Length: 260
Image (cartoon, helix red, strand yellow):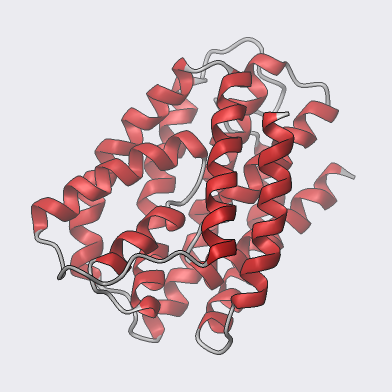
C-alpha cells in the first residue's frame, strides 16, 4: 500500500517539476513525513529521512524535465553553470544545518516555508524585472543561498530560483527551464550529503541509505521521470493559473498541519 502511495506521489512531483520549475519536494516532504509517521519510524529521524529522500527523488524528476526544456531551447546554460558553482557549496552547508535541527523543529520550519509559498502562489506575487542579467559572482552567490535553503527544505529550489531569475529580467519560460536545470545539482549535492550524514544512525529503518529511504525513492522515481516530461510540455502550452491556486490551497493545509 505504501509503495502505491509513492508511485502516485512521484507522478504528482513529476508534473510539478515540469510545470512550475519546482522539484516537487514541497509536496514530497510532507507526504513522506505523514507516511513515515504511520509506519512507526522513529520521530527523531523521520523528518530528516523525508527531506533526504525527497532530495534524492528530485535527481530523477529533474532529468526528464530538463531534457524537455532543453529540447525547446529554453535553458540558459551559462547562467546554470555559474549558479551550480554556488549550489554545490550551499547544499552541503544546508544539509549540515538541517542535521543540527531537531525533527519537530525542522517540521515547523518547513511548515512556515509551505505557507509562504502558498501565499506567493495565491496572490501571484512576482518580482518585477527591475535589473539585468547578473554577473558571474552574483550568480554564484545566489546559487549558494538557494542551495543552502533547498537542502534544508528538501526542495529543488524552483520556488526560489524562478523568482530570482525573473527579477533579473529572464523571461518566465527561460526562468522555469533554467530553474529545472539547477534542481539537478541541488538534488545530487544535497542527497549525497544527507546519505553521508545519516550513514551510521542506528535509529534509521531497514532499507535506508543514510537519510534516504530506498523504497520511497524507487516508487517516486519510477513515475516522476515519466510525468516530468508531461509537466514540461504543459508549461509551454497552458496557463497554469488554476493549477497554481489549487496547489497553493494544498500547501496551505500542509503548512498548517505541520505548525499545529
